[in-house]
Length: 477
Image (cartoon, rainbow, N blue to C red; front, side):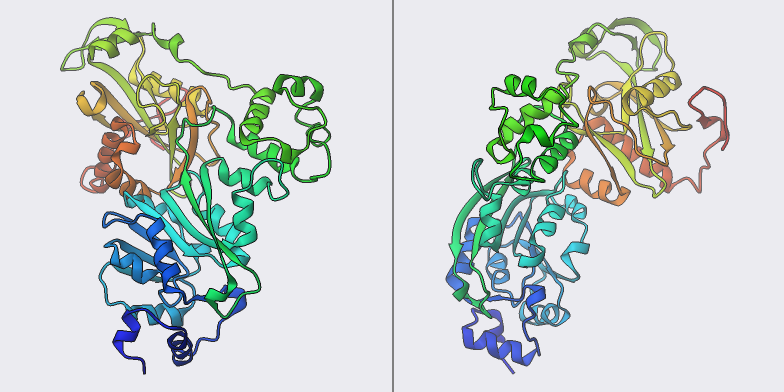
């Protein structure tokens, strides 16, 4: 039996062999079980992540804890995801640290969105070579709570992720990752530092999220479809592959100032975005057209005292009216929108499913129906939830909040919404608590009020008159 000192300190190659024998682990190639025995390299990898005590570090495939030890030394909280039950149990016995949480599960089954409940999240790991691509795509799916990734990958994969245009390794996966992340190839790692020794060398890469406004506005779905089709047959000219998207390819090539015979790997990320925008130009780049909208100006009792233009209302911080609509799917998940980058307030913040100002001559209910249709293309029954008083947290707006349920996916108006995603309420609870600055302040207030209302509904049943349908007819359904 190995003593505690051996378990808690650096493990030599002989100690690793003895430990694996003791816990009856015979490394499985399909699980990517290659154990790092170079402690200097392990320390160097952790140092690159610049970990502090404020960080919440997710480690995929900790194995015998070669990296875990050095992460804990930085004072961070560690969530270790280990698929092998024997290794998970060994880690629990080796590290008696309250800052270490070990989950025995397949990382591909882990939901990264629960990590929004932590303010600073970093991902570290020696990813199994055979599933590194799906793991990356899962943990980096947008929106992602991860602020930095420091990963050991098969060298071929690391080269692909960091590749430049015009190279053989540059492909669809390269662009898909680089669209939202900056990738840096840090160093190569020889196979000799692992037990058992793998058939290929490895490499360490660093991924950092791009700023949301670093790249031009574009349609993510269209862009990724173009990239997928463009790289489906690398030897073919791009114009021939994209005939279903661009009938007049010569005109598109001229617009982009590229060779009509160009192939997919020759276009940079910015050129791919320009291509998508040439095929489907962004519809909205300014919100100035709404500056002269007339809003009711109200007093502290929400009684109308006059009217003023949007720009004047916001500029002078007058009290006014707004609605927020919370749209849920049948599973109980809430649809959040990320506000357009062109909004005059809270641009690119996450917000209610739909929201908007009450215009002159409109009621709250009429506004809710209009905004739901304009922003999400929906026409569903809505239920009034709660009315919030005007305050600094609501931008001096009196707000009526509403609830509705849909069976399909909303169709977000690209002029109003950057993107929209359904989230589980528990995820939103943790996210708004840990990262309130990610949201428009009024949504945080509406969500608190909604959760409070739902928690107390047994004591205070919602009255039938709080329901109305999209066409204005009363309903108690």
